[in-house]
Figure 1 (tube, rainbow, N blue to C red):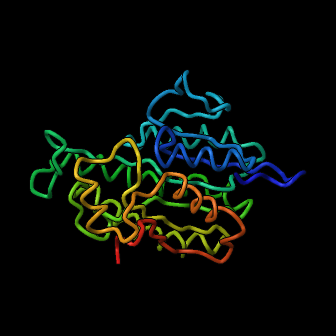
Figure 2 (tube, rainbow, N blue to C red; figure 1 turned 135 degrees about the vertical axis):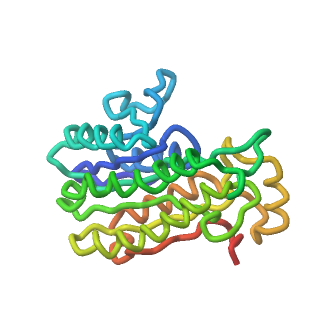
Length: 251
């Protein structure tokens, strides 16, 4: 794993949706490189979690509640030593399913679900970035939004609200890159395809064999490595990009 050079000042990452899959792999990737990782989740810090930092670097927040998100932003600011935030990774997202795990279409998704999905998947990322802009600007930090392959094509498992929220987040990434770039903060996105996590839907193997040229699932660490690159000097002139991590599924 990547390790930080000796005498390198410790950097700080704020990560939403850290408890499993891509989020958990991102915690491992950054912490192994010497970063402090502050996590946000709607759940309290789990006692059985092997993550060493513990509850002092975890903030419980309901990102579907705008007022609670604002409250969390203030708490995050109070926890940032020296008022510096080197990276913000907006990974948290919700993808509601119908009965039996059925995909929810534009016809059968109720308005409350549409609203909740967009609050978590679209509004929370821009709220966090705007609320912490001074801390990001102080160190010319980086923002990474996690979109999805479902944001650019109809997916057999991802519902309409999830897919359109991810498409909106991709567009938001470009807008943020334009606005935040002027104060030295880069904003990019990654768009994962079929990644081997605990939330894979039945039928994923069919996609792997019929649509992915590499004929395999991606791993959470393969995604986390690209997130890490986008948050470091290796990508210092990359701004407004959406990187597809899907083994060629989109070609």
